[in-house]
Image 1 (cartoon, rainbow, N blue to C red):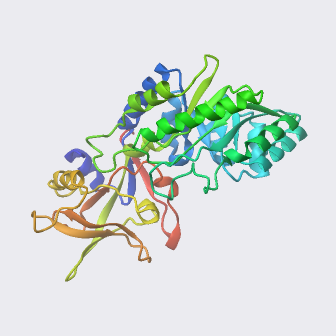
Image 2 (cartoon, rainbow, N blue to C red):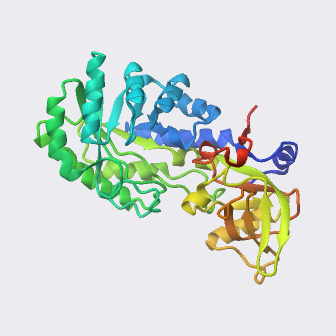
Length: 403
């Protein structure tokens, strides 16, 4: 919910922009830190979710590490104060330039995703007379029960090493003198709300770490990735996810020896609810079968609905009824209709010259007018960071609750 004073502030700002509620971000980070530290779990923030500078500074201040998937993310993490010994570098296609950069920064660990990558890192580390810490990213073949575009732990995905390749991995690790095997790494997908998925992951991790131990390897690190989802339907009611229950699954089902560290890589769950995309209605188009709200924000500012068919709660901030009606719609997982309320059904679309530039269809909102402020909620993860300059659009700006 946005209070009237904040909505009045928005009226003075050129749209579209991302509004960051830094107080909510801090409360979320504290909840995660308290729950994870209680079990002595180590959390790395998944940089790809949001690398807004104010967000990074806030996340770093809570003592989290950084999970990076590019050389520039590695640099950004270190430049924003993340400790090098808490930086991990994942990614199925690390370039030689990026690997060399990470070696020069003496990061904690590379999460290697192929047998060939082990050769490449070993060769580059040897040239620098260095030893690179390695964790092996393994596909546990656990179904995350999420959108097929964001599942990553199945054998047909491009990520990681398949279980049947592990003998070759073990042989390669024995051959590579400039690699130091730290442990094993997993990531099964994103926006996972069914905690049984993580329980199934634990069972696979237990099996695989036992296999490595039987081959004579010491498994110091169990990195179970991230993937914890949020509530896109009720962002006010469930603004902070249940970190306690999430971490308890791993405490209860993961076989952890006293000498082992358990690492996590959370992104969406930490930052998604802290930001909304604020836009204005440019035009209202009324048709025989469809009504359209044309916003000044589009897929260049938030591409998730177009790319993943992702749901975001949409509210008309200029109409006081919208927050209540939107929550009613979300609780039913479907929009209200003019036949059941005094609301109007709109397709909420952007200005981009693409037919797919549509945030949602059949959204029940109060009768809307040109100039009304619209909030697209839960946009703190994979929102601003995926914005583009397509159609030579201006880059979307950021506004903060503090400063």
